[in-house]
Length: 316
Ligand code: SAM
Ligand code: SF4
Image (cartoon, rainbow, N blue to C red; front, side, top):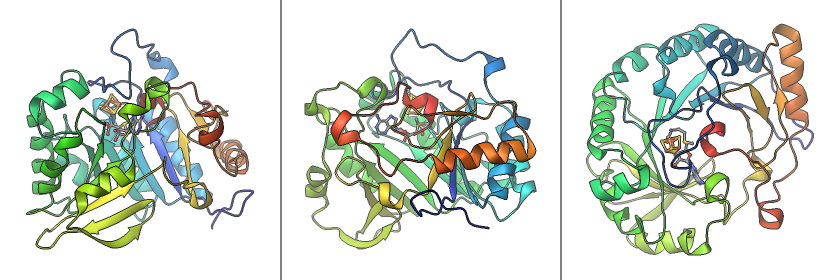
């Protein structure tokens, strides 16, 4: 089965935030303090998340990404992965993680059937990394990446948000990670939403500013929303994802569910459909309603992002 929204786009992809909690406080994602976290009872249980994935799968969604907050904070995330693969082993299951808790879990995630890992790493310089994450250690993430490679993950993506004057000069060190391992570094333009909503334009690096650093690289393909570059002699690739310079709306194939069970038809809209407590056909119908309410495009350039949520609640 395939499901199309009101504008003829086939919806195949669900990003499910499994928690709003995080052990980091990245400066562009969460406030340093005073974060209003959801109570445990408000957060979806593993059973509820499994039901949502089952209903989405029945509607034709075959790609699931677990995100957060930090998804690996949830001790039961491995069970969720097993449950998702038990629905259909063909479901393409990915996780986006900050990697800090990955080292001891990488093997269990591989055994549970996780297909892909995206690991966020904004700098390999310990001081810059500490500054961006407000206290994180690069060593924990690099250990996580190594453990994931050892566990057999062969298509690891590193997500890097570049901030002018903060980590723009770390770009070449990050690219070096692609030399000897099949690691794919993807530079992502900062989006002005959540804590970054009213940031000055001085902090934003455009794709053309990033491209200036990629003089020796050649475009090898377009992979979904990423323009992918190859460098001679490197096992991995470099990608550019430019939500600000380009609109992905015409080819958008995703829906999002927040950790408290609200379906967001569009990242930048405040429109939400409550899925908590629903099951079976009622749940399928609510997801279908959400898909049909997907707007044709966001109004970022006109009004800015309309969502009042921080990124840790939505999951990116
Ligand atoms: N904690 C996990 C992590 O950091 O990978 C998963 C959740 S995090 C919200 C998902 C992604 O969103 C991360 O790669 C992060 O860099 C990105 N992100 C957060 N705020 C952003 C913003 N304002 N603009 C662009 N990307 C952002
Ligand atoms: Fe946490 Fe990820 Fe947000 Fe950083 S980007 S604060 S790691 S949720």
